[in-house]
Image 1 (cartoon, one colour):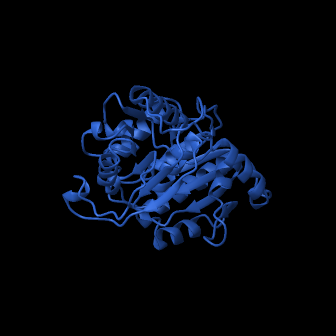
Image 2: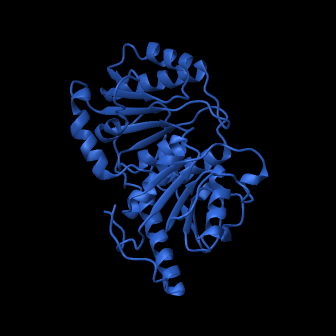
Length: 328
């Protein structure tokens, strides 16, 4: 992903609590900006202090030119560093910060978070680190895994239970039944990967019910083929629990189907509906067909938004401390 010009900074920090999903969003934005970065992880904290800038994060000056944070735990840190740097650190927070957006230079938030402001970039889905270049590289690397499978190959991204949605063996059985139906009707095959949230019992159910279906199912050993399965898919089926997996799937330009898990939360329903209404996805009910899909490139759009606001701030401040430098 290329942006409109050289990023005029010499240092960038990414600060999260270490959850992979949060890190990948921040890393994806930094990579889209074309900057190198230093990844810093913080310990999860309790209480209002994390929202009010009273966080004992242990980070010290010299402060970075650009700070990208993601998730609620890093909100106070962003506010704190912005104050301690006397506003010289340009702060970007990803997701709803649950505080005033004027405490950051830029907020990047998905539409279903309902965050508004002149410095807010509203995205359809989550920003992420999937790019077409990475997919092409992964396709060459992992092609032998799926070489013997009949086409079309339906990549299946299985998430799991979270605080918003459930996933029981009964749901796993229903999902497997619909996947088997899709393969039977299409004459194709499955390429399946599970997440840590899928759960052992659900994974056993899915493996058992799909045992007679032409498929490749990752055994959770060795190199994760996630990018490869995205790139080599003819179609993608993804469970509704993961905003990141849905967004990443839609960035590929492949036909994407969303399987709704029980008790689907409001935010997840809103995201799915917006993508379906825009033609980037369809609900998965057990049937599939090929259709043209335009890659959803919200990470690039967010990077351009950050770049424009950074340049505007520099012009206002006439900040001579920044030297244009490219990390691409």
